[in-house]
Amino acid sequence: MDLYLETFGFTANIVTPIFFIVFLGYLLRRLKVIDESFIAVGSKLVFTITLPALVFMSIAQMDFQAVFNPGQLTYVVIGTLLTYGIIWFLAARWIKDPKDLGVFVQGAFRSNFGIIGLAVSFNLFGQSGLAQASLLLALVIPLYNVMAIVCIMLPLSKERSLNLASAGIEILKNPLIIAVVLALPVSYFALPLPEVVSTTGRYFANLTLPLALLTIGGTLSMKSLRDSSVMAAWATATKLLLLPLFLTLGAWLVGFRGQELTLMMVLFACPTAAASFVMAKAMGGNAQLAANIVLTTTLGSVITISSAIYLVRVFGVI
Image (cartoon, rainbow, N blue to C red):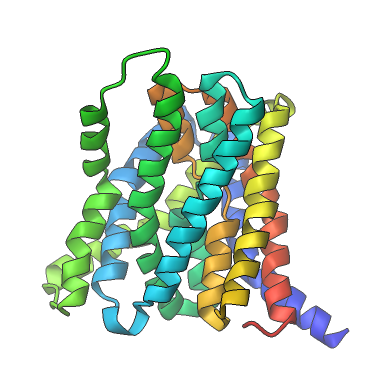
């Protein structure tokens, strides 16, 4: 009983502050303290400035040689691509509308690791967890964006003419990808940052998690939840249960343990990224389905991430 209570308290301390801020954003939106304009501006500020600043500072100031784990990165790439292919193959068997297919696939694999994942990683392991999680984020940002564009674009290409060169340019212009590209050489060569850059970067980085979590909460809609479809339910089950279960178990069987295994579990278990809705809407996919998946995975992850952390704590992984 003592172990149960200790583990429950540990899990609650990790997860509760994150989702408290998410639901505070939902409450403030309902009370009209914040509105659509705040959410739109806040989301844009996070995407274009504060999250890239957090990613840049986390990567640039980490000890690259200490946290670089080629085995972990290789497993994440192979596991992500393999499950991506399986999800797409199976989904194509029963989802016939091209506007739905790519959105479903994206919703089932694309983790909100940049917001939820970094917050959980920091709460679990402090700066060392944030540094290693940032390196994982540096890997999955370009990977997720390319995969998302491909799975939405290809089904729709039969209906309309899509410009591949334009899509490639949009990927290269992604602020998060730019932040990763700029930060990796700084970290690898251990280049010192000027004090003014370091201080300013920390100010922006510190805005990221609370502002992003508030805006995610502000976008939640119970009406959208009631209107959620069977496809959203399957995407949610895949994202929150099947994917983290099989990929984490696979990582354990391969030999990963401790912090590196736990961080991969967090990566795989995170809810679907809110950016998936923006991308689906911009590219002509089923935006309502994308919104439903973001909503249901975000709400469901309160239980699944808490349970996952509880289990790794009970089994002595951390």
